[in-house]
Structures are given as structure tokens and as C-alpha cells.
Length: 82
Image (tube, rainbow, N blue to C red):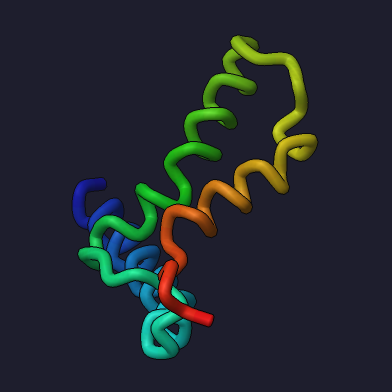
């Protein structure tokens, strides 16, 4: 199970890297350590989803899609990019 989890984690990291690479090369994103991308972008929505699934919040996560998208963008965008 440990090897399988490691393989899934590696594949996931590669997918994230593939998705973000063109934006990083275009300097649309700020320079961040590679291992920080997923936690910074997905962390807030992941936490909300966990809370929603546990019944701690009632509003469907889809209702806040724009809120989470804006938060993710504001976290990684390069403020100097045009």
C-alpha cells in the first residue's frame, strides 16, 4: 500500500507540475517552491469540502466556487505580471 500511495502521489505531483508549468514560464505566477503549489491552491477548498462532507457547514461547495477560485488565483498570481 505504501508503494501504491507513493506512486499516486508522484503522479499527482507530475500532473500539478504539468498544469502549472506554462503559467510559471510565462511569469503569470509568483515563484514558489514546487511542493507548495497544491497545498496553497487546493488547501482552502479541500478544507471546506472536508467540513461540508462532515456536516460542519451546510452550503454546497459549488456555491463558493468563485470564492475559492479567486482565493487560489490571488495566492499564486504574480502581482507584477500584466
